[in-house]
Image (cartoon, rainbow, N blue to C red):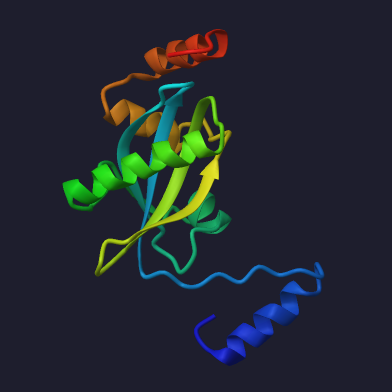
Length: 158
């Protein structure tokens, strides 16, 4: 919503489907994603960025209209990327994750503030999925990534 009228209309529409509605603040910046791999000693891939090419990165933008663009590595300064990677591992550990997850952040345009968006504990592995693409661009091919994930499944420690 870009104004109070649109917000009111959107809330009314959402309330047709449920009694609870989540409203999020608009964050002007980039969506940056990091693949994390491991058990007790997880490590993070390089950062990737999704430019939705639309107002929202919804089903239409992701799968149908082909308007989104991926940038690997993300178009952020190196020190910001390192901060994002560190925070991804912190979130992963705090949530008690094992094996794999993708951690998504927003990086604000002006201050480069890093804001957690979500953690995806079962990220996709399709031809357009970020998780394997991030590792591939970090130098870990798909087959090697699968071997590492299998190793994680059979070990308690990295």
